[in-house]
Image 1 (cartoon, one colour):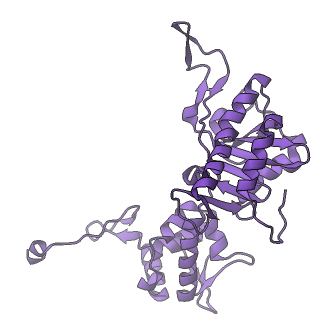
Image 2 (cartoon, one colour):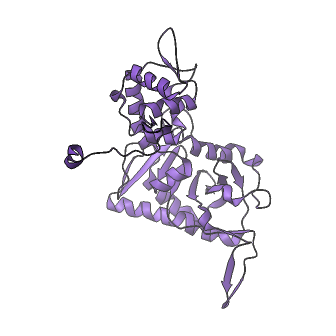
Image 3 (tube, helix red, strand yellow):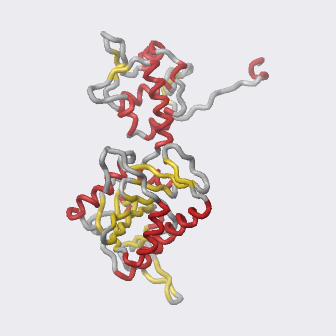
Amino acid sequence: MQTTDTPTETTDIFNWANLTDGIKDQLQIDLFLYTKGYTVYATNYTQELKQQLKVLFLYEMISEVQTGAATGLTVREFEAAEAEDNVLEYTTLDKAEHVQEVIEQIAYGEEGLEVFSEGDHEFKKVKGIIARFRHAGREPFYITKLLPQAQVLKGATAWIFNEGSFRPFAADAGLRITPDNQVLIIGNDIFVFDEVKFVRLFGYDAKKFALAEEKIKAIEEHFKLSFPEGASLDTLVRDSKPLVNKLQKIDPQLVTQQQLMDHNDEIGMDLMQDDATGAIILMDTKDVQKFVNLLNDDYVTSEMTGIKYEVKNKKELRLDSTDSAA
């Protein structure tokens, strides 16, 4: 697996599909589960499932790429491309840290992985399932799918219908694996067949963050900010999806630093300023949350009751001419 900082050539996905099609019957398959916290577990499966695994995970993916080669399928960077027909998006492990975290646990720590069991673990914490395909002399590749809880059948609450009648579902749990194509990892490259499921699987929404980065740059140009050593507005925002989402809506030019800090004092927030430089001190994500909320005008005081509120959703009140006249 390539994880170095030096540039590497992107995998030729069309060549990969043709080569893999030729050896698909000789591939070894290992199956893993990973949780919402990206802890990976090894699993066991019976040989009766091997052919079904290839059908559910691999065959349709090969077919989609080969068909795309004949119909002009375009491969574009995930961070730059929009989800559209006949476009396959890709990114790399060094950009999508949670993907890298999962793959490295398998590639470098497989011997230490716990084997998943419903008795010791819980399927409700499982987020995804990943199949590793291996062949002698070739680099392994990985195909992963989202595993929503709706696809998990628990033995205590499920029935089976067999030979004309309902019967108890005797297993610990059952899984329904959808045959759709979602995410393929080859070496350092991640190919995204389903953008929505990729984002849900790994929390990597680079397009939203690209917009947030523009707002971060504008905020840093407009406000004087101070951070602990090694921290920045970028690093404190990156792992907070609500902050990334909120930054999409903010116009940092609407208020000055003095107006923001005056409002901070009025509302009773505890953001501080450096006495020497006048910079707003942001020590952690909580401080950044308060700063962004102030910037987004999320704190208001009721003129009627004097109660202070944090407003979760706002809709600008636009009075028509009749209301204004009244």
